[in-house]
Image 1 (spheres, helix red, strand yellow):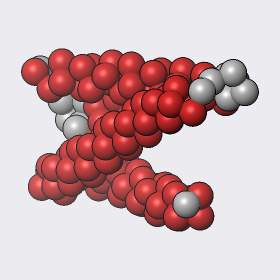
Image 2: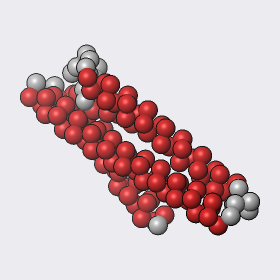
Image 3: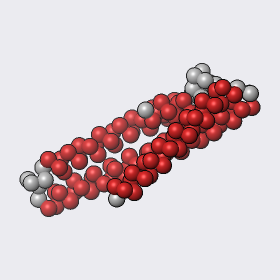
Length: 129
């Protein structure tokens, strides 16, 4: 979903027929995110399921892996959100310059939804800590 939002925010299918070299970067970022999230989830499952069998050192190592992969996925999330908001700004400026007010209104609503989701995620992470 992050990759799709990046593509839409860059104007793919609305103002651009192709994203060119950016498409490879988007796919690469998406695949990297999937790999890191998968490894994070595996480390979390091993940490929870094997807690009674693991020694203190093994438990600490798995927790360190879980923390590392969680940090990486969080950084990728931030990169995605920044890329999405940057792409939205450029696309909205283009739509404003071309006087395409209906499309611009849709992008303004999308930006509002994304900002609310960012605020909700920040709120949720503060409560979770």
